[in-house]
Length: 434
Ligand SMILES: Nc1ncnc2c1ncn2[C@@H]1O[C@H](COP(=O)(O)OP(=O)(O)OP(=O)(O)O)[C@@H](O)[C@H]1O
Ligand SMILES: [Mg+2]
Image (cartoon, rainbow, N blue to C red):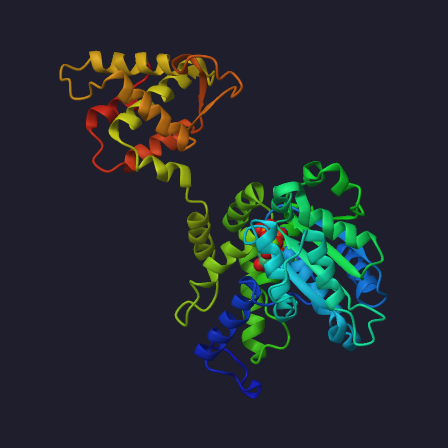
Protein backbone atom coordinates (compact mmCIF):
# COMPACT_ATOMS: atom_id res chain seq x y z
CA UNK A 1 0.00 0.00 0.00
CA UNK A 2 3.00 2.25 0.46
CA UNK A 3 3.98 2.16 -3.21
CA UNK A 4 1.13 4.34 -4.40
CA UNK A 5 1.69 6.44 -7.49
CA UNK A 6 2.00 10.10 -6.69
CA UNK A 7 -0.03 11.38 -9.59
CA UNK A 8 -3.02 9.42 -8.38
CA UNK A 9 -3.70 11.92 -5.61
CA UNK A 10 -3.64 9.25 -2.93
CA UNK A 11 -5.82 9.64 0.12
CA UNK A 12 -4.55 8.92 3.63
CA UNK A 13 -4.95 5.26 4.57
CA UNK A 14 -7.27 6.19 7.43
CA UNK A 15 -9.67 7.92 5.05
CA UNK A 16 -9.60 4.97 2.66
CA UNK A 17 -10.26 2.51 5.46
CA UNK A 18 -13.25 4.38 6.78
CA UNK A 19 -14.54 4.73 3.24
CA UNK A 20 -14.20 0.97 2.69
CA UNK A 21 -15.97 0.23 5.95
CA UNK A 22 -18.74 2.62 5.06
CA UNK A 23 -19.33 1.12 1.62
CA UNK A 24 -19.15 -2.50 2.71
CA UNK A 25 -21.26 -1.98 5.82
CA UNK A 26 -24.02 -0.49 3.73
CA UNK A 27 -23.76 -3.47 1.41
CA UNK A 28 -23.70 -6.08 4.15
CA UNK A 29 -26.12 -4.55 6.65
CA UNK A 30 -29.27 -4.38 4.54
CA UNK A 31 -29.07 -0.60 4.30
CA UNK A 32 -28.57 -0.52 0.61
CA UNK A 33 -30.53 -2.38 -2.00
CA UNK A 34 -28.44 -3.95 -4.74
CA UNK A 35 -28.98 -2.32 -8.15
CA UNK A 36 -29.85 -5.66 -9.64
CA UNK A 37 -30.44 -8.46 -7.13
CA UNK A 38 -28.10 -11.28 -7.98
CA UNK A 39 -29.50 -14.60 -9.10
CA UNK A 40 -33.16 -13.58 -9.03
CA UNK A 41 -33.51 -11.61 -12.25
CA UNK A 42 -36.35 -13.77 -13.53
CA UNK A 43 -38.30 -13.43 -10.30
CA UNK A 44 -37.67 -9.70 -10.29
CA UNK A 45 -39.04 -9.33 -13.79
CA UNK A 46 -42.08 -11.49 -13.04
CA UNK A 47 -43.04 -9.58 -9.90
CA UNK A 48 -42.42 -6.19 -11.48
CA UNK A 49 -44.67 -7.02 -14.40
CA UNK A 50 -47.40 -8.30 -12.12
CA UNK A 51 -47.39 -5.21 -9.96
CA UNK A 52 -47.24 -2.94 -13.00
CA UNK A 53 -50.46 -4.45 -14.20
CA UNK A 54 -52.13 -3.26 -11.02
CA UNK A 55 -50.32 0.03 -10.65
CA UNK A 56 -50.55 1.12 -14.29
CA UNK A 57 -53.40 -0.80 -15.86
CA UNK A 58 -55.65 -1.14 -12.84
CA UNK A 59 -55.87 -4.93 -12.89
CA UNK A 60 -56.23 -6.81 -9.65
CA UNK A 61 -53.89 -9.60 -8.75
CA UNK A 62 -52.51 -11.81 -6.04
CA UNK A 63 -49.17 -13.53 -5.66
CA UNK A 64 -47.09 -15.31 -3.07
CA UNK A 65 -43.33 -14.91 -2.66
CA UNK A 66 -42.04 -18.11 -1.13
CA UNK A 67 -38.52 -18.89 0.02
CA UNK A 68 -36.51 -19.92 3.07
CA UNK A 69 -35.39 -17.42 5.70
CA UNK A 70 -32.74 -15.03 4.48
CA UNK A 71 -33.23 -15.98 0.85
CA UNK A 72 -33.98 -12.41 -0.17
CA UNK A 73 -37.77 -12.21 -0.29
CA UNK A 74 -37.99 -8.83 1.40
CA UNK A 75 -35.06 -7.59 -0.62
CA UNK A 76 -36.67 -8.70 -3.89
CA UNK A 77 -39.92 -6.99 -3.02
CA UNK A 78 -38.15 -3.79 -2.03
CA UNK A 79 -36.15 -3.75 -5.27
CA UNK A 80 -39.28 -4.29 -7.30
CA UNK A 81 -41.12 -1.51 -5.47
CA UNK A 82 -38.19 0.83 -5.98
CA UNK A 83 -38.18 0.12 -9.71
CA UNK A 84 -41.97 0.32 -9.90
CA UNK A 85 -42.07 3.73 -8.26
CA UNK A 86 -39.61 5.13 -10.78
CA UNK A 87 -42.59 5.87 -12.98
CA UNK A 88 -44.01 9.22 -11.91
CA UNK A 89 -47.57 8.18 -12.62
CA UNK A 90 -47.24 5.14 -10.39
CA UNK A 91 -45.61 7.13 -7.66
CA UNK A 92 -48.52 9.55 -7.65
CA UNK A 93 -51.23 6.90 -7.73
CA UNK A 94 -50.20 3.74 -6.00
CA UNK A 95 -51.14 3.28 -2.36
CA UNK A 96 -49.32 0.78 -0.22
CA UNK A 97 -50.36 -1.10 2.87
CA UNK A 98 -47.71 -3.16 4.61
CA UNK A 99 -48.85 -5.68 7.19
CA UNK A 100 -46.80 -8.22 9.08
CA UNK A 101 -48.19 -11.38 10.62
CA UNK A 102 -45.95 -10.91 13.63
CA UNK A 103 -47.39 -7.47 14.36
CA UNK A 104 -50.99 -7.63 13.22
CA UNK A 105 -51.95 -10.69 15.18
CA UNK A 106 -55.68 -10.49 14.54
CA UNK A 107 -57.90 -9.04 11.86
CA UNK A 108 -59.18 -6.17 13.99
CA UNK A 109 -55.65 -4.89 14.56
CA UNK A 110 -54.86 -5.44 10.90
CA UNK A 111 -57.87 -3.39 9.85
CA UNK A 112 -56.90 -0.54 12.15
CA UNK A 113 -53.42 -0.58 10.71
CA UNK A 114 -54.78 -0.57 7.15
CA UNK A 115 -56.97 2.41 7.96
CA UNK A 116 -54.01 4.20 9.46
CA UNK A 117 -51.70 3.51 6.55
CA UNK A 118 -54.31 4.67 4.08
CA UNK A 119 -54.83 7.86 6.11
CA UNK A 120 -58.51 7.17 6.48
CA UNK A 121 -58.88 7.44 10.25
CA UNK A 122 -60.84 10.66 9.95
CA UNK A 123 -63.07 9.34 7.21
CA UNK A 124 -63.91 6.23 9.22
CA UNK A 125 -64.38 8.23 12.41
CA UNK A 126 -66.44 6.19 14.83
CA UNK A 127 -68.55 4.46 12.24
CA UNK A 128 -69.55 0.95 13.21
CA UNK A 129 -69.44 -1.75 10.57
CA UNK A 130 -71.36 -4.99 10.55
CA UNK A 131 -68.59 -7.07 9.07
CA UNK A 132 -65.00 -7.00 8.02
CA UNK A 133 -66.08 -7.05 4.38
CA UNK A 134 -68.23 -3.93 4.83
CA UNK A 135 -65.39 -2.15 6.52
CA UNK A 136 -62.92 -3.07 3.80
CA UNK A 137 -65.19 -2.03 0.98
CA UNK A 138 -65.84 1.24 2.79
CA UNK A 139 -62.09 1.83 2.86
CA UNK A 140 -61.68 1.04 -0.81
CA UNK A 141 -64.68 3.21 -1.70
CA UNK A 142 -63.16 6.09 0.22
CA UNK A 143 -60.06 5.84 -1.90
CA UNK A 144 -61.87 6.58 -5.14
CA UNK A 145 -60.66 9.56 -7.04
CA UNK A 146 -62.40 12.90 -7.00
CA UNK A 147 -64.62 12.06 -9.95
CA UNK A 148 -65.33 8.67 -8.31
CA UNK A 149 -64.94 7.00 -11.68
CA UNK A 150 -61.82 5.10 -10.90
CA UNK A 151 -60.12 3.85 -7.79
CA UNK A 152 -56.52 4.29 -6.90
CA UNK A 153 -54.61 1.04 -7.05
CA UNK A 154 -53.72 -0.40 -3.65
CA UNK A 155 -50.89 -2.79 -2.94
CA UNK A 156 -51.31 -4.99 0.10
CA UNK A 157 -48.13 -6.63 1.30
CA UNK A 158 -48.60 -9.35 3.91
CA UNK A 159 -45.24 -10.32 5.34
CA UNK A 160 -45.16 -13.59 7.33
CA UNK A 161 -48.23 -14.42 5.30
CA UNK A 162 -48.71 -17.86 6.85
CA UNK A 163 -49.49 -16.29 10.23
CA UNK A 164 -52.57 -14.57 8.78
CA UNK A 165 -53.97 -18.03 8.07
CA UNK A 166 -54.34 -18.54 11.82
CA UNK A 167 -56.70 -15.57 12.20
CA UNK A 168 -60.28 -16.41 13.00
CA UNK A 169 -62.08 -17.69 9.89
CA UNK A 170 -59.24 -16.28 7.78
CA UNK A 171 -61.50 -13.28 7.34
CA UNK A 172 -58.84 -10.85 6.23
CA UNK A 173 -57.35 -13.22 3.68
CA UNK A 174 -60.77 -14.17 2.40
CA UNK A 175 -61.79 -10.57 1.90
CA UNK A 176 -58.54 -9.39 0.38
CA UNK A 177 -58.44 -12.25 -2.10
CA UNK A 178 -62.13 -11.72 -2.80
CA UNK A 179 -61.52 -8.08 -3.67
CA UNK A 180 -58.51 -9.05 -5.76
CA UNK A 181 -60.84 -11.19 -7.85
CA UNK A 182 -63.72 -8.79 -8.22
CA UNK A 183 -63.74 -5.57 -10.17
CA UNK A 184 -64.38 -3.54 -7.02
CA UNK A 185 -61.01 -1.79 -7.01
CA UNK A 186 -57.57 -2.51 -8.40
CA UNK A 187 -55.69 -4.24 -5.63
CA UNK A 188 -52.61 -6.42 -5.61
CA UNK A 189 -52.15 -8.76 -2.69
CA UNK A 190 -48.56 -9.89 -2.19
CA UNK A 191 -47.97 -12.53 0.47
CA UNK A 192 -44.44 -13.19 1.67
CA UNK A 193 -43.70 -16.43 3.47
CA UNK A 194 -41.06 -19.00 4.21
CA UNK A 195 -43.52 -21.86 4.29
CA UNK A 196 -43.50 -23.89 1.13
CA UNK A 197 -46.70 -25.62 2.17
CA UNK A 198 -48.52 -22.36 2.74
CA UNK A 199 -51.43 -23.20 0.45
CA UNK A 200 -52.29 -26.14 2.67
CA UNK A 201 -53.05 -23.66 5.43
CA UNK A 202 -55.73 -21.85 3.46
CA UNK A 203 -59.40 -22.67 3.80
CA UNK A 204 -61.04 -23.86 0.64
CA UNK A 205 -63.02 -20.67 0.05
CA UNK A 206 -59.86 -18.61 0.56
CA UNK A 207 -57.72 -20.82 -1.62
CA UNK A 208 -60.20 -20.69 -4.46
CA UNK A 209 -60.00 -16.91 -4.51
CA UNK A 210 -56.23 -16.86 -4.70
CA UNK A 211 -54.65 -16.61 -8.14
CA UNK A 212 -52.19 -19.42 -7.34
CA UNK A 213 -49.33 -17.35 -8.64
CA UNK A 214 -46.19 -18.12 -6.71
CA UNK A 215 -42.69 -16.76 -7.00
CA UNK A 216 -40.10 -19.06 -5.52
CA UNK A 217 -36.72 -18.05 -4.22
CA UNK A 218 -34.94 -21.34 -3.95
CA UNK A 219 -31.57 -20.45 -5.34
CA UNK A 220 -29.01 -23.08 -4.61
CA UNK A 221 -25.57 -21.75 -5.55
CA UNK A 222 -22.70 -24.13 -6.19
CA UNK A 223 -19.64 -23.74 -4.00
CA UNK A 224 -17.71 -21.92 -6.69
CA UNK A 225 -20.61 -19.51 -7.17
CA UNK A 226 -20.66 -19.04 -3.41
CA UNK A 227 -16.93 -18.28 -3.39
CA UNK A 228 -17.37 -15.85 -6.22
CA UNK A 229 -20.16 -14.15 -4.33
CA UNK A 230 -17.90 -13.67 -1.31
CA UNK A 231 -15.36 -12.06 -3.55
CA UNK A 232 -17.87 -9.71 -5.20
CA UNK A 233 -19.42 -8.78 -1.88
CA UNK A 234 -16.02 -7.72 -0.53
CA UNK A 235 -14.71 -6.06 -3.67
CA UNK A 236 -14.71 -2.33 -4.26
CA UNK A 237 -16.09 -0.82 -7.42
CA UNK A 238 -14.50 1.60 -9.83
CA UNK A 239 -16.06 4.63 -8.23
CA UNK A 240 -13.91 4.30 -5.12
CA UNK A 241 -12.16 7.65 -4.55
CA UNK A 242 -8.63 6.21 -4.37
CA UNK A 243 -8.01 3.97 -7.38
CA UNK A 244 -4.75 2.45 -6.20
CA UNK A 245 -6.16 1.62 -2.81
CA UNK A 246 -9.15 -0.03 -4.46
CA UNK A 247 -6.88 -2.09 -6.70
CA UNK A 248 -4.78 -3.22 -3.75
CA UNK A 249 -7.87 -4.00 -1.74
CA UNK A 250 -9.42 -6.04 -4.53
CA UNK A 251 -6.17 -7.91 -5.06
CA UNK A 252 -6.03 -8.74 -1.37
CA UNK A 253 -9.63 -9.96 -1.46
CA UNK A 254 -8.73 -12.18 -4.39
CA UNK A 255 -5.74 -13.62 -2.54
CA UNK A 256 -7.93 -14.14 0.50
CA UNK A 257 -10.48 -16.15 -1.46
CA UNK A 258 -7.75 -18.29 -3.00
CA UNK A 259 -6.28 -19.22 0.38
CA UNK A 260 -6.74 -22.90 1.17
CA UNK A 261 -7.67 -22.48 4.84
CA UNK A 262 -10.18 -19.75 3.93
CA UNK A 263 -11.69 -21.99 1.31
CA UNK A 264 -12.08 -24.77 3.87
CA UNK A 265 -13.77 -22.42 6.33
CA UNK A 266 -16.10 -21.12 3.65
CA UNK A 267 -16.92 -24.65 2.60
CA UNK A 268 -18.12 -25.30 6.15
CA UNK A 269 -20.36 -22.22 6.02
CA UNK A 270 -21.61 -23.21 2.60
CA UNK A 271 -22.55 -26.64 3.90
CA UNK A 272 -24.54 -25.25 6.79
CA UNK A 273 -26.28 -22.39 5.02
CA UNK A 274 -25.97 -20.81 1.62
CA UNK A 275 -28.08 -17.72 2.00
CA UNK A 276 -26.96 -14.12 1.81
CA UNK A 277 -27.91 -13.32 5.37
CA UNK A 278 -25.52 -15.72 7.08
CA UNK A 279 -22.90 -14.97 4.46
CA UNK A 280 -23.18 -11.25 5.18
CA UNK A 281 -22.94 -11.94 8.90
CA UNK A 282 -19.61 -13.67 8.38
CA UNK A 283 -18.25 -10.95 6.13
CA UNK A 284 -19.38 -8.26 8.53
CA UNK A 285 -17.36 -9.89 11.30
CA UNK A 286 -14.33 -9.97 8.99
CA UNK A 287 -14.79 -6.33 8.11
CA UNK A 288 -14.91 -5.30 11.75
CA UNK A 289 -11.32 -6.49 12.10
CA UNK A 290 -10.06 -4.11 9.43
CA UNK A 291 -8.28 -1.02 10.72
CA UNK A 292 -5.44 1.31 9.75
CA UNK A 293 -3.01 -1.11 11.34
CA UNK A 294 -4.66 -4.01 9.54
CA UNK A 295 -5.76 -2.50 6.21
CA UNK A 296 -6.84 -5.73 4.50
CA UNK A 297 -8.79 -8.84 5.42
CA UNK A 298 -6.30 -11.60 6.13
CA UNK A 299 -7.04 -15.32 6.22
CA UNK A 300 -6.66 -15.27 10.01
CA UNK A 301 -9.41 -12.63 10.25
CA UNK A 302 -11.79 -14.74 8.27
CA UNK A 303 -10.99 -17.86 10.27
CA UNK A 304 -11.57 -16.00 13.52
CA UNK A 305 -14.87 -14.58 12.24
CA UNK A 306 -15.89 -18.00 11.07
CA UNK A 307 -15.23 -19.42 14.51
CA UNK A 308 -17.47 -16.78 16.03
CA UNK A 309 -20.26 -17.59 13.60
CA UNK A 310 -20.08 -21.28 14.27
CA UNK A 311 -20.09 -21.12 18.06
CA UNK A 312 -22.20 -24.02 19.03
CA UNK A 313 -25.27 -22.69 20.77
CA UNK A 314 -26.31 -26.13 21.92
CA UNK A 315 -22.95 -26.91 23.50
CA UNK A 316 -23.07 -23.52 25.17
CA UNK A 317 -26.38 -24.40 26.72
CA UNK A 318 -24.79 -27.36 28.45
CA UNK A 319 -22.92 -24.92 30.64
CA UNK A 320 -26.16 -23.79 32.18
CA UNK A 321 -27.25 -27.26 33.26
CA UNK A 322 -27.30 -28.46 36.85
CA UNK A 323 -24.88 -31.20 37.91
CA UNK A 324 -27.70 -33.72 37.92
CA UNK A 325 -28.76 -32.79 34.40
CA UNK A 326 -25.18 -32.99 33.26
CA UNK A 327 -24.85 -36.46 34.82
CA UNK A 328 -27.93 -37.61 32.95
CA UNK A 329 -26.46 -36.33 29.70
CA UNK A 330 -23.26 -38.27 30.40
CA UNK A 331 -25.25 -41.40 31.15
CA UNK A 332 -27.01 -40.95 27.81
CA UNK A 333 -23.68 -40.47 26.08
CA UNK A 334 -22.56 -43.84 27.48
CA UNK A 335 -25.78 -45.48 26.34
CA UNK A 336 -25.24 -43.99 22.92
CA UNK A 337 -21.77 -45.54 22.82
CA UNK A 338 -23.05 -48.94 23.81
CA UNK A 339 -26.14 -49.11 21.69
CA UNK A 340 -24.64 -47.18 18.81
CA UNK A 341 -27.17 -44.40 18.74
CA UNK A 342 -30.25 -46.55 19.28
CA UNK A 343 -32.90 -44.74 21.29
CA UNK A 344 -33.12 -45.36 25.03
CA UNK A 345 -35.70 -44.79 27.70
CA UNK A 346 -35.37 -42.76 30.85
CA UNK A 347 -35.29 -45.84 33.05
CA UNK A 348 -32.18 -47.04 31.24
CA UNK A 349 -30.55 -43.66 31.76
CA UNK A 350 -31.41 -43.72 35.42
CA UNK A 351 -29.93 -47.20 35.79
CA UNK A 352 -26.76 -46.07 34.09
CA UNK A 353 -26.53 -43.17 36.48
CA UNK A 354 -27.11 -45.49 39.46
CA UNK A 355 -24.23 -47.67 38.31
CA UNK A 356 -21.97 -44.66 38.47
CA UNK A 357 -23.25 -43.79 41.94
CA UNK A 358 -22.74 -47.30 43.24
CA UNK A 359 -19.09 -47.12 42.38
CA UNK A 360 -18.80 -44.11 44.61
CA UNK A 361 -18.97 -44.27 48.34
CA UNK A 362 -20.34 -40.81 49.01
CA UNK A 363 -23.98 -40.08 48.49
CA UNK A 364 -23.60 -36.55 47.27
CA UNK A 365 -25.50 -37.29 44.09
CA UNK A 366 -28.41 -39.22 45.49
CA UNK A 367 -31.60 -37.81 44.08
CA UNK A 368 -35.21 -38.87 44.49
CA UNK A 369 -37.01 -40.22 41.43
CA UNK A 370 -39.28 -37.14 41.01
CA UNK A 371 -36.25 -34.87 41.01
CA UNK A 372 -34.73 -36.95 38.26
CA UNK A 373 -37.93 -36.88 36.25
CA UNK A 374 -38.00 -33.10 36.59
CA UNK A 375 -34.45 -32.92 35.28
CA UNK A 376 -35.46 -35.01 32.26
CA UNK A 377 -38.36 -32.70 31.62
CA UNK A 378 -36.03 -29.74 31.65
CA UNK A 379 -33.66 -31.42 29.21
CA UNK A 380 -36.57 -32.08 26.93
CA UNK A 381 -37.70 -28.46 27.14
CA UNK A 382 -34.20 -27.43 26.11
CA UNK A 383 -34.52 -29.84 23.19
CA UNK A 384 -31.42 -31.73 24.26
CA UNK A 385 -33.41 -34.92 24.29
CA UNK A 386 -36.37 -35.71 22.13
CA UNK A 387 -38.98 -38.46 22.18
CA UNK A 388 -38.59 -40.75 19.19
CA UNK A 389 -42.27 -41.01 18.58
CA UNK A 390 -44.37 -38.21 20.01
CA UNK A 391 -47.61 -40.03 19.25
CA UNK A 392 -46.92 -42.75 21.83
CA UNK A 393 -47.92 -40.48 24.66
CA UNK A 394 -49.70 -43.35 26.33
CA UNK A 395 -46.45 -45.05 27.26
CA UNK A 396 -45.38 -44.34 30.78
CA UNK A 397 -42.90 -41.50 30.80
CA UNK A 398 -40.02 -43.60 32.08
CA UNK A 399 -40.36 -46.04 29.19
CA UNK A 400 -40.83 -43.58 26.37
CA UNK A 401 -38.04 -43.92 23.84
CA UNK A 402 -35.76 -40.91 23.63
CA UNK A 403 -32.81 -39.73 21.64
CA UNK A 404 -29.96 -37.48 22.70
CA UNK A 405 -29.74 -34.50 20.36
CA UNK A 406 -26.03 -33.89 21.02
CA UNK A 407 -23.10 -35.89 19.76
CA UNK A 408 -20.18 -37.12 21.83
CA UNK A 409 -17.75 -34.41 20.84
CA UNK A 410 -20.26 -31.73 21.77
CA UNK A 411 -20.71 -33.30 25.20
CA UNK A 412 -17.01 -33.72 25.79
CA UNK A 413 -16.07 -30.24 24.62
CA UNK A 414 -18.76 -28.65 26.74
CA UNK A 415 -17.64 -30.66 29.73
CA UNK A 416 -14.11 -29.31 29.45
CA UNK A 417 -15.48 -25.82 29.79
CA UNK A 418 -18.18 -26.53 32.38
CA UNK A 419 -17.53 -24.25 35.36
CA UNK A 420 -16.12 -26.22 38.27
CA UNK A 421 -17.07 -29.60 36.96
CA UNK A 422 -16.33 -32.22 39.67
CA UNK A 423 -13.38 -34.36 38.60
CA UNK A 424 -15.13 -37.66 39.23
CA UNK A 425 -17.86 -36.69 36.82
CA UNK A 426 -15.33 -35.68 34.19
CA UNK A 427 -13.57 -39.02 34.64
CA UNK A 428 -16.85 -40.87 34.36
CA UNK A 429 -17.62 -39.05 31.12
CA UNK A 430 -14.23 -39.93 29.70
CA UNK A 431 -14.24 -43.52 30.86
CA UNK A 432 -15.25 -46.24 28.50
CA UNK A 433 -18.57 -47.89 29.25
CA UNK A 434 -18.81 -50.10 32.29
N1 LIG B 1 -29.75 -11.58 -4.41
C1 LIG B 1 -29.22 -10.87 -3.40
N2 LIG B 1 -28.21 -10.02 -3.61
C2 LIG B 1 -27.66 -9.32 -2.59
N3 LIG B 1 -28.07 -9.40 -1.32
C3 LIG B 1 -29.07 -10.23 -1.05
C4 LIG B 1 -29.69 -11.01 -2.06
N4 LIG B 1 -30.64 -11.77 -1.49
C5 LIG B 1 -30.62 -11.46 -0.19
N5 LIG B 1 -29.69 -10.54 0.07
C6 LIG B 1 -29.38 -10.01 1.39
O1 LIG B 1 -29.61 -11.03 2.35
C7 LIG B 1 -30.22 -10.52 3.52
C8 LIG B 1 -31.50 -11.24 3.82
O2 LIG B 1 -32.48 -10.97 2.83
P1 LIG B 1 -34.00 -10.73 3.18
O3 LIG B 1 -34.14 -9.94 4.43
O4 LIG B 1 -34.65 -10.19 1.96
O5 LIG B 1 -34.47 -12.22 3.45
P2 LIG B 1 -35.96 -12.75 3.64
O6 LIG B 1 -36.14 -13.84 2.63
O7 LIG B 1 -36.94 -11.62 3.63
O8 LIG B 1 -35.86 -13.41 5.06
P3 LIG B 1 -37.02 -13.55 6.17
O9 LIG B 1 -37.84 -14.74 5.76
O10 LIG B 1 -36.26 -13.82 7.42
O11 LIG B 1 -37.78 -12.28 6.20
C9 LIG B 1 -30.41 -9.03 3.25
O12 LIG B 1 -29.35 -8.36 3.85
C10 LIG B 1 -30.33 -8.90 1.75
O13 LIG B 1 -29.82 -7.64 1.42
MG1 LIG C 1 -38.23 -10.78 5.05
